[in-house]
Each structure stands twice: as C-alpha cells, then as structure tokens.
Amino acid sequence: MSSFLPDPATTAEISPSAVAAWINLPPDQRPRLIDCREADELAICKLPGIEWIPLGAFPERWQALISNPNLGVVIYCHHGMRSLHAAMFLRSKGCANAFSMSGGIDLWSTSVDPDIPRY
Image (cartoon, rainbow, N blue to C red; front, side, top):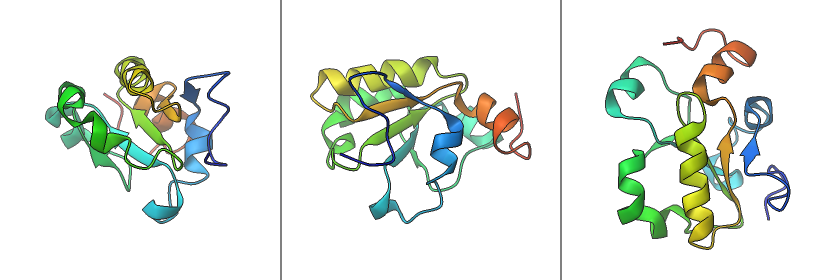
C-alpha cells in the first residue's frame, strides 16, 4: 500500500493538501491522479501530472485504472462528488486503494494553489 494515502478502511477521501505533498513526484513513485471531469471543465483548469478519464468512461476502463493497486488511485472532479462516486466504483471492483480528493479542484484552488481558476 502507498504511504501517501490514508487507511482505506477509515476513509474514501484524501485532502488536497495531502495530494499536494506528492503531486510533483514522478508518476511511478506516487498514486495515479485522475481527473474525471468533462472536457469543457478540463479546458478551464487542471492539475499537473494528471490522467484525464471522464467519469462516463470508467465502466469500460476500470481494469486499466487499477493496474497498479499498490500505488493507489486518487480521482478528482469539480467539488468531489463525482470523484467520490468514481472511487467507490473502483473499490467495488476490488481496488481498495482508490480515493477521492475531497472538495475537488475547487478546494485545491482555495487551499493549495490560488492560481488555479475557480468556476
């Protein structure tokens, strides 16, 4: 299990500040960071080092999303609701190390990086 993630038995969410602590590490050394928003939202703003997989594609792509469960998966959206749904979907497929970034990119903008536009 990744040392960057909380205990999956106690929560399905991770804070933006916790993600900020490892986001700049090489992708093979940190959890996968997946943006599950739609293309028009991605055009407004995005975090560095992300993979973009819209929530609607999760049913077809879930096996690839959990290809390295030891590193874990963190998903984010605008406010954290869609990403929580996505994390719970991946957990239902056997990936206990799937998390939603609480508050989404909106909370990231207010608590980590004010240069990320809010919408």
